[in-house]
Amino acid sequence: MKRHNGAILPFCLVFLTLLGLMAVAGLESLLLHERMLANARRSHDGFEAAEAALRAGEAEIDRQCPGFSVNAVPPPDGLIWRQVVELTPQWWENRGIEANFAGADSPAPRYFVEFWRGSATSPGAPAPVYYRITARASARTPAAASVLQALGVATCNGAQTITRNRLSWRRLG
Image (cartoon, one colour):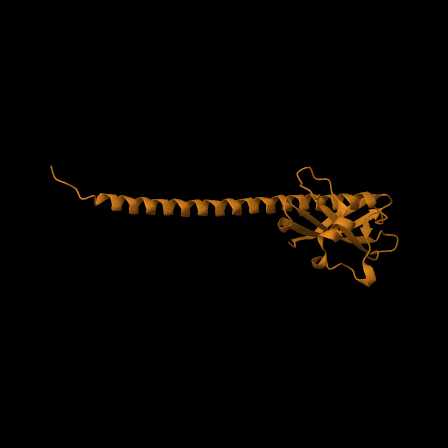
């Protein structure tokens, strides 16, 4: 019987160490992907809640026809539109209108409406009202906040909306 000097033991220890390091690296990669997926999900949830708030703002415009005065914010100091980039979460909490969205986390998605009444295209015709709705929602964390804007025009006759068209849409954050 041939004697072994135990050379296989250091080889196995090195091999097991390498396997352990590969497993740790794989777990770190898995955790990174899990965090990325969770962030993408929060961002998507925030986007969906902001879109729901945008639709709530459009429904508010339909309800306000023809006055556009209940919850609409007229442009201050002769400016047509506000600078939304500077708005803080506290501003939204104090002045934004809460939108009802079942899938939203706390705080609820909020929106505000700005309007500018144009001039009538012909005598006796209703004047179009140009509006901009800005909506903000965050899903679980303020870092996952989504801010959306829609520009549109509405024409009212009496107490009903004749037309309301979304002219443009953009995502600010």
